[in-house]
Length: 552
Image (tube, rainbow, N blue to C red):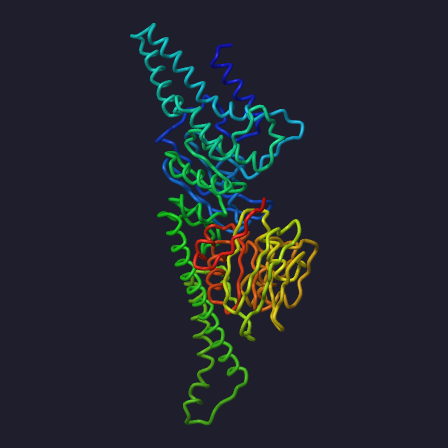
C-alpha cells in the first residue's frame, strides 16, 4: 500500500471512530468558488405531520445563512436534510463541494477508544493526503516534463492543495482549537470529555478546516464569551458558505447575510430574506402587519355578508311588513331579492377571495389595575448557602427595571427565587409590601402531568399566546415552545406588580420575542430579567444592571 492509500484508509478509520460528520472522504475534491448547495422544493414529514413544505434554497460561497423559527418548526430538520443526514420525502438536494456538519449532539459510547488525536488527524488527513499527492505529482513531472497526462495530474493536484490550503493546515487547526478552548491532551479519549468540551472540539475541527460549506446547529451551546467572539470572527472570515441554526440572535445579527425563516407564513412556505438579520426583522414585521390586516379584512367582510344575509332571511321568514307608503315597507318587500343578491355576493366573495390563513397571534399583556406607590419589594444583604454566596441588595418600585448578569453558577436564578419567596435566604431579608403580587417565570417548566384550568385557557387566549384548538390538547402534548407560552400566560395572569423573568426568550419564536420586548417596555410593573440572550440584552441596554460575580 502506498502512502496516499494508507493516509486515506487511516482517515476513514479515524472518522468512523470519531463519529464526526466531516468531509466524507479525504479524496473529495473541494469546489472552491464553484461550490453550491441547492435545495429544490424539499418537503419532510414526521409520521403524517408535515414539518417542512416547498423549501428552496441556493447557497453559494461567501453567503452566511441563518435558519430561524420557533421550536418544532423544522430548523434542525432542514439542516439535517442539507447535510444528508435525512432524506426529503419530496424535492431534491444537490451538493457540489465539501461539507462540514456540526449537529447539536454527539453520542459517544462509554467504551469508545476514540481519542482527541483521532478526531484531529481525521480532519487533517485530507490536507496531508493532498500535500503528499502534490509531492508525488511533482516528482513524476520532473521525470516526464513533456507528458501531458502527467502535467494535467500535477495541475489537478496543485489546485486541490491550494483549495485545501495544505501548507497552513496545521497552524489553522491549532488556532481553531485554541480559539474554542479545545486544546486538550491529544491522548485523551472523547468519553473522558464533557459534552461541552466535545462540542468545542467538533467546532474547532470543522471551522479549522477548509470546507466549501459548513452547517452548524446551535453552535453557541457551551461557548464562553471568548469562544463566541472566535466563532463570530471565524464565520465572518470564511470564503466558503455557512448555514447556522442558533437561538443567539446577536450572533445571527453579526454574521448573517441571508435568512431562511421557517415560521408560519401566509402561503405555508419558508421565507427567504437577503440583506442580513436586520432586513429579516424589518421584513418579517412588515409581512406580519400586512398578513394580519388582510386576514382581519377578510374576516370582517365575511361577517358583514353573513350578517346581511341573516337579516334578510329574518325578514323573509317573519313576513313582517311596515305600513304601505313608507320607505321601510318598500325595503322589506324587497327582502327575497335582497337574499338572492347577498347570496350572489357571498358566492362571488368565496370565488374571488384568496383564502388567507390565520396569522400568528400577537402578544397582549396587561399590567396591574391596582398600581402601588412606593417600594414594592426589598431584598437586604440576601445570600443562599451553596447557591448565592455573595450579599445582594435590591429595592424595586413601580416601573423599576433591572437586568441581572453574571457567569453560570453564580446564583442569578437563585436570586429570582429568593425575590419571589420561593426560596428562603440563608442570610438577609426579603420584604414585599402588603398586597403586592410577584410573578416568577422560571427557566423550565415544572414537569409532571399538568392539566388545563378554565383560568389558564382564558389567559392564553386573551394574551394571544395560543390558538383555541391548541387549548384542546393536554399540556403534556404541547411542544416545548407552546409550553413556554403557557408558562408566560400563568405569570401574566397574576397581573403582577413585580415580574421576575428567568431566561424569558428560551424556546420562543422571533415574533414572540419582539412582542415580549415591546410589552415589557410599556408595563407599569417592576421587571427583573435574567438572560444570556445577547440580542435581548442589547435591546435592554438602557436598563440598570446588577452584575453577580463568582467568588473564590
